[in-house]
Image (cartoon, helix red, strand yellow):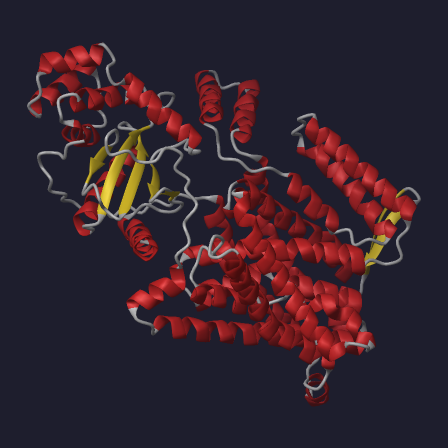
Length: 627
């Protein structure tokens, strides 16, 4: 396609509207919750050392919930550990399902690496722990030395290594999801009390009912709450750790992008309510809006902040308190439990994760490689040495008294050492030469391609050098105000990056913008005369005036044959091309505008100049290394 006659890209925008995505919300929540978790841990330590008696008295308080002659009675600490933490593992399960449905693991060939890395990052720490505790009664606590705290680790990684690319967090999330799943299986298989099979069969029956209800398409949350609670009580009575039901329910909660058809139906329902605001139509519009978003996204938005900001810090407050004095420190630093946990996390985690990743890469002869560089993999391995939530949970199941205190101290010490070691890795990476640093952070593996229809220079409208290393694709709507606000950003990017080409594809949201389809056809009618970009610029500058007389006037202003333009517009010459763009948008999971793809990978984040520039630089570095 031809370049526009005026190739200058002037203007600057101060607009920085945030475009939220599930992964971005997740990582931001984890970063904030890490600080709260740290405060809760310090508070527990201070409380236990100032007044241990009141600390133990509060969390040892019995709380009973009874219905007729049946009920559940536990102390507050167990209500937190076995009750509230069920919601934490519900979120873990939903995170795992999201990664399988929409994340890095949606390409099943990529499943091998995080699975092996996650398992390797557990086997090596367990081996180190057993090496120091084998043959002793303390060997039963091996499970406390294997699991990474996803929230704490990702939060600390963002604080310590803030210059690392976001893909490091994504990769670590996929590894720790495997870690969490295996840890829950370990809890269920090795750290449950004497199993009572009648109650276990009852739990299985309740879960079977949940599966039947789900297969029948029932979406009322109350149904799942009732049967989920019944399964939780049955598991508790059976002696199996009941948090497992949270993980199972989370794995059942599918994730998917919002379909354009569902969004259009939601728009129609809201328009009906706007015309006739009755209670019945309000409920219908509310249900339609909710159904346009997958259950996974809706429930994560509800539960993830609660688990990160309330439940996990409350768990830390109730479990991390240990009285530290000279005698305790002298005993702990020589305790095989403490030493086993510290060495397992600080040495075993990075050795296991990095070693397993290297082994898979080597055995596959490079066909399977990490999506990040080896410096980033190493930092991920060291930060994985923060094992807090699940480790404390398993420690409370495996130990009592003095041994439990030593295990808690080892877990806390390992978290501090792992954070320091990660900082060292980040510092070493930062002093490398630019080329070596890029390779250490980004690696050379091919990225997942989200864009279903590859860019075709013979078909697509291109702006910038055809052979550029980086391609920025925008699905846009000429009547969308956010596309208009993004246009100066795109111009500035093209002016600032010589190796960038820009592609516009049509996504007219006619249910929201009544003139978007006509404007898109006007752009294609102008393209018939070699002036697509001139018309593109004119339409985005006059988004409020997109009727036929306006479009014909714009055609005359940019020097087109107005009669031919009007004929092409009336005969819908550009309609087939727009339909092709709509089809490619659907295949790529695009439902709103503007949506950007950088080198085929969907850009999830803000699209102000600073954020898009950083994304383009990262894509350029990866493209250079791959080439």
